[in-house]
Structures are given as structure tokens and as C-alpha cells.
Image (cartoon, rainbow, N blue to C red; front, side, top):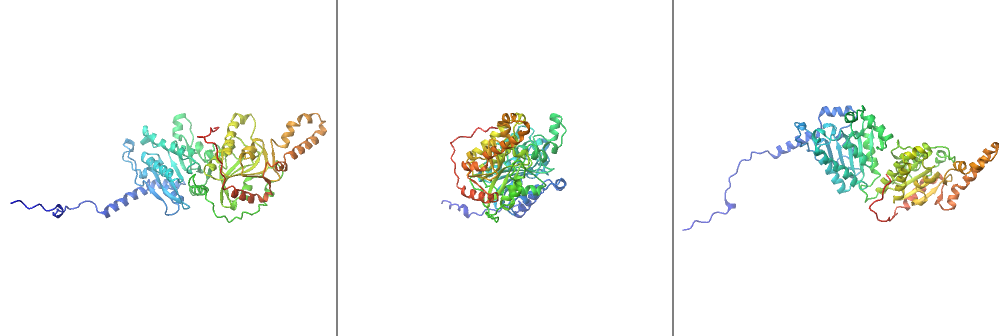
Amino acid sequence: MSEPPAAPAADREIPTLAYTGPTMAGAVSELAERKGRHLGMGGPDKIARQHSLGKLTVRERMDLLFDPGTFLEFGLLGHHQSLSPAMQGKFTPGDGVVSGIGEIEGRRACVIAYDFTVMAGSMGMIGEFKAGRMRELAARERIPLIWLIDSAGARIQEAAGSTFARTGDLFREQVVMSGVVPQVAAMMGPGAAGTAYIPGLADFVPMVKGVASMALGGPHLVKAAVGEDVTEQEMGGSQVHCKISGVADLEVADDPACIAAVRKYLAFFPSNNRERPLVRDADDPIERRCEDLYQIVTANPRQAYDVRKVIASIVDDHDFFPMKPDWAKSLVTGFARFGGRPVGIVANQPMFLGGAIDVNAADKAARFVWLCDAFDIPLLFLMDCPGFLVGSAVEKQGIIRHGSKMLFAVSEATVPKITVVTRKGYGAGYFVMNGRAYEPDLIVGWPTAEISVMGAEVAVNIIGRSILEKIPEEEREKKRTEMIEAVRAQISAYVAAGWSFIDDLIDPADTRTVICRGLRHAEGKRIERPWRKHGVLPV
């Protein structure tokens, strides 16, 4: 007789083994403990040291940067994985980088923030993996990327060998993202070597006065390499880069002011180059007359005035956000709003060099115009330009090459462009300040405008020299005055208007209204250029 079939497996009684592993409550408790250690950054002593230097911690900075409750951190539990003997026994919370996504005025942005309390914010392998993750997300999600830099540069203890090459990805990726998403590098401490090239490729670089610095080599490296004794501030502080080199855009007083500048800057920009800048509700009436301009600017073309007062008079709520205000001072650049619309402003500054354009001013303007054009921000040119600076000194500096950059940028820009000729529009200065041939959607002048190859006095000095030499000396000055007045009549604003070289002459008090209307009418502007891979920039 055959045996009965075995019972199905499901019906068998399976012995229960005793579970001796951690409980869920225990696992959660361990997770909280580990996260707490990482949130503690470099520990109380390092945090106290950070505060003693007048700096906030990286997490305090994060609280100021993002809208409350919006920050989502990536890679909190990251730490170094190096087998280098110099790294053994070291704990690196977050591997010296805090990264994630948050919201600024309701719009998302990625952040890479170096933590100086952890190995001086040096660039370790895991920290750079985290940074790479943020660059990936910023490019894919098409949202701004912000660096908060407080870093000694590459982590020599971990990357003295060839592994440092991994960090080179960031520079290539910055270039790929240029003009696609806004990139900000806020200098809130040192930025040496690798972290110095980040601001070099970023769109906006504010620096904290007396605290921030950037240089390709720190003082110790410079001493070892070239024997020079120099401090961080002497070599690459905000005084150097905001006033001499032009690498930085704005000097600010402290960390809160730096974060506020970042937030304000981004408010002028769309999240990416496929979106339009946000138009805000404006309480300042478009029709507001600016009669204070009568006192700010005189009819005398030789009398200087501060163009920043002109800008403050005509923009929404008198609020202007300058870019590179302490570098190349003969040209003013920055952002404002007209009727709620973000606008980039390029203005000659008669207080310096009479408003003439030198090599630095040309570079400053070209980069600013390219920035605005990349993100569809309209441009306003306030022209009072006697032309380019001349002389052997500037020729040796390459004024032709640098001036060509500005010509290139203004010619290439396809955003709405409005030009107001307040006084002088002489020579090539008229061209680079978006003269009639450079596709302005509106070009107007004040009745004090003069458009000419050169000013009346200079013209008489050149073309009238032979005539004046033949006149008795006692009659020469009278004749010279007559000749100057004759030339001035030929270059008056009414001659330009008569030839339709400008669209209209306006009362200076109506400047704001005219600009606001011009911007509104140019909103639908579309220009098609011949296809090309890219132009050949005159750099």
C-alpha cells in the first residue's frame, strides 16, 4: 500500500526562530543620533572659531538663503571614504559640503555650500560627488545653482595624487550650464585653487568685505612657489577683486548682506533661459514725472553729474542693484525695474573719465550685456559718451580688442533694447552704447543730446587749426568761439531728429514714462540671426 501524499508546504508548521536584531525604534534612534553628529558640523570648538571670525556657519547661512521650511538636503550622511593614511581616524560630517534644493521667493534653486568647520571646507572626493549631484539636478531641472564658498581648496591630505582630477568635471559643467541657468558664487570666506575658478565662471560673485578672498594659490603655496610673503586679503580680498581685478561683482558688509544680495539678484532672473523674467506688480506709477532730472543734469556738456542719481530717479521705487560698482567706474551697470519689468542698465558715468570707455569699462559692459541677453532681460542704455579713451597707453592695453568685445556684445544682443541719449554720443561711443544701427527698439534723446564724430571743441581744434593760426592772436579766441557754436549747431539733437536718426526728442521729466512704454511695446521682439555654431569672440 502506497504512502499518503505529503502535505502541501503551506500546511507545514515552520519553526519560529527568535529575532535578535535591532528594533525599528532602535534603528530610528540610531539614525537620529548619526544625523545629529553630521548636523553638528565640525563641533562646538570649530563653530565658535567660525563665529569669532565674523562668519556664520554653513547651516546658519542656509537658513537665510532659503524660504523657511523649504530646504531639502542631499547627502547629509556623506563622509570621507579615503584610504589615505593622512585621513585615517578623521570624521568629516557631510564631507565638508552641505548640498540640496530649496526655494527662494517660491522658486527652486540648488546649493553647494562648503563648511569651513570641517577640514577648512576643503574639496574631498565625497563632497565633490555631492556637488556633482547638485550640478546634475540644476542642469536637468533647469534651476539656478548657488555656491556658498568658504573653502581652502582641494583637500591635499586626500587628493595629492591623481584623484583630484575628478573635481575638474565641475568647470566643464559650469561652462555647459553657462547661459542656461543662473550661476552664483557667493564668496563668504577663502576660495583657493579649485574653489577660485568657480567664481571665475559664475554669473554673479558677491564678496564679504575683509573676510572673503579668492586666489589660485593660498599664501603658503605662494610662499613655497615664488617666495612672496602676502596675506589672503592682500592677494585676493574684496578690495582686490571688487576694485582692481574686476573678478567680483559686489562688496558686501557681512554674511547676512551677502545672502540678501544673492536673493535680490536672482529675483531679476528667470529660473532658466527658456523662461521669461518675472514681472512684478508695481506701485510706482509709470506716468511719474522725474523733474528732479532738470537739476541733476545740466545742459553744459562739460559739467559732470552722477548718473546713478539719474538711474535712481527713473527706476521703480528708486531701487537700483549695481554690478561691479567699484570697478571700471566710467560705466555703470546693474539691474532695476520699470513698471515691474526687470531691466539691465548700461550707463556712462561722467564723474569718471568724463564717461569715456577704457579697456575695463568695455569688458564690464560686454559681459553684462551677454549676461542679460542670455536670460532675456531687456537692456536700457543711458548714453552720455565722449567715445573711447585714446592715447598710447590704452592702445598698448589693447583698447581696440577690448572695445570690439563691447561692439560684439551689443550687436549680438536680441533682447528688447532702449537707448536714451542724454548729452554726448560721440564717435564709436555712440555705436557701442546702442546707437541707431544696433537695433534699438526705441532710441530717444533729450534736447541736450549731441550726436557727432566728436565734440565741438575737439572738432574746431582739429579742422579749424589752420584757420585760427592765420588770425591775429587778439581775434583768435572770438573766432574760435564762433566756430565752436557753428559746429555745435550741426550736431544738435534737432539735426539728428530732423534726419530721423533718433525716434523722438523728449522732456527729461518724461524719461521714465517713455522707457516703460517702450519696454511694453518691445515685449514680442523676435530677431532671427544666420545660423552659426558661435561667433569668434574678440577676447
